[in-house]
Amino acid sequence: MEMCLKERMWGEVDRLAHRIKDEYAPGFDAIRSEIHTAFERQHGEGSANGSEDFAKEVNDRYKLETERNGFTSVVYGQRALELLEPMQEVYERTPILQVMLENLRALAAGRTS
Image 1 (cartoon, rainbow, N blue to C red):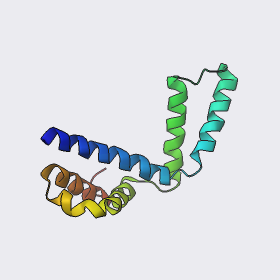
Image 2: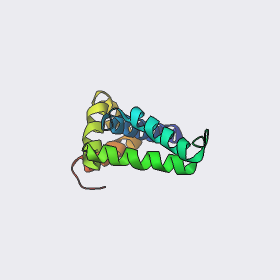
Image 3: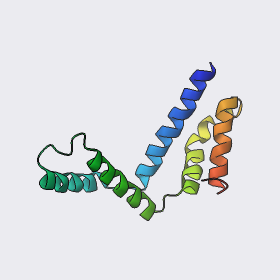
Image 4: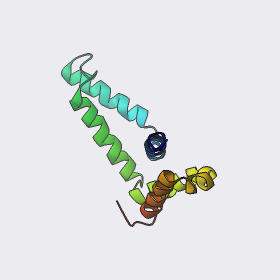
């Protein structure tokens, strides 16, 4: 049971991180497409597929875009708690998930990074 709850916790953290970061990168699909086109123009058609260099370029730009739009660990913690609010009562009664909430509260308060 503990393993299932840990998987739930990490799944929630991952899902929330992607959802919240996407809120701070509106229109990123267009930016990714531009990066893709430029990369393949420089390296050849199909070169972006499976390329670590392409993935790094996209990830670096995504991070820059989210930070430019105000994404921080504090923002993540605050927004994650907001999104989890409907489940908060249940999570508070589940030790592993309670720890997740405590960590998110610490992030939201700026106590950890």
